[in-house]
Length: 249
Image (cartoon, helix red, strand yellow):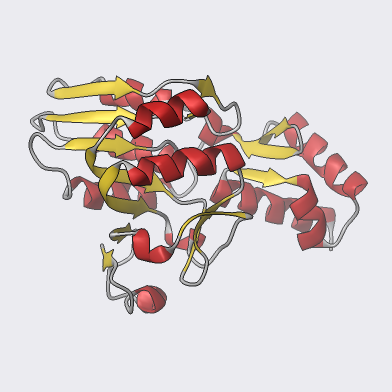
């Protein structure tokens, strides 16, 4: 495989999952650690990615407000946001995760909606704060530099004291057999606490992420109430999910 092809595959994985682990890339691409290290170093020097311990993360995910950073699949994420907003009702209590799709959602919320939003993402909180009728409450703790959300025991303890109408989460990986998965153990623990605190769970995901699996399980698929993608609910691509009790949007 040529270096350009290899780096294009690495970039696609970063765009899809926000973060890649060097060890996983070695296995997937069947190359040495030194090769991956050189690739990531070169891509970082070219300004395409941000190198972190054990792998790399996407610039648009880490700095979504920098207009020089193109948000991957932004139109699809905006369509997902428009669909998700239809679940939000007056005086609801909502809990959100982080990520570029959630920021697109926060941008599109109507100024007339009166609701309370809890979020583990400072970037989402800042975006939500622009809306005059929203009460925005950040759930704070240690900030994960890889995912730009708060993690740790203090976050989980705060979530244990919260009961919300609906939790909106992005998915790092989602499949029929493995459910929702992620690559970061600390984030997994926080997501589990978020799900536990909510009456309903909506997963927001671009279709490219479906049928992908990360290392650690967040929850089984039957825990999810709504799956929101940019596709039409009757798309053949979603047919394997239509046999569950999930409402496709």
